[in-house]
Image 1 (cartoon, protein in one colour):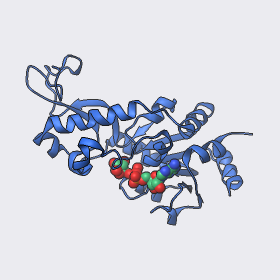
Image 2 (cartoon, rainbow, N blue to C red; image 1 turned 180 degrees about the vertical axis):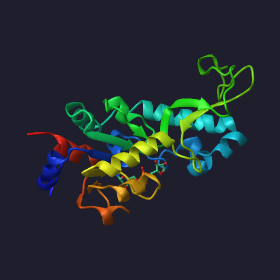
Image 3 (tube, rainbow, N blue to C red; image 1 turned 90 degrees about the vertical axis):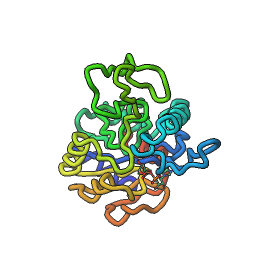
Length: 239
Ligand code: APR
């Protein structure tokens, strides 16, 4: 099966890749729910990752993201992230990388033009529409930082439950799914839409890379059972 899929990679002019939390498992990034340790064990992440929770208790949500940022800043991209970045660098324009992950590891591995559907945990944006006084670089220090003139708060630039995905990234991801001869679906359980819908909309062959069964196995033309850091280098390296 690996040889057959390697042949599909070789012959595909456009490859779309959709990754999820499992992509970063071998880097040691705790998944959304595993990170709930110590002080944070008492909170359900889905109760924290919402605009409502942030407005109700800005410092609690801000501190939770600071805790997660600290965890993620300590880990490194794994061989799977590096294999995807190396392929994209060898074949400019042939691979479109779409990720649900907010950990920034694809970007740190050197993948160009990453479509980060759920945002990036290391970036901030204003909670309310910024006025001319709102300058993130000059924000007053605090948890969260804020605009000293109008009181606007900075928040993590990630997609919270109930929020829309960034329209441009989603449009580019849908286009990549529409034109691809092949889509690699790596490290995602395939239960969260609209991201998971991209695999169902893929024009080309779908290949799932996951050690466990997923909700997208039924649309797969091939399933490679294993970890991303082990399988992707084998799949993408060239003779
Ligand atoms: N290599 C590849 N896949 C792996 C590995 C690995 N080493 N280890 C685990 N997995 C798989 C699991 O089998 C599972 O199918 O990664 C998947 C992780 O699934 P989820 O935790 O549901 O993560 P994801 O699919 O990215 O969740 C989608 O939901 O939690 C929200 O917004 C959050 O972006 C996230 C979204």
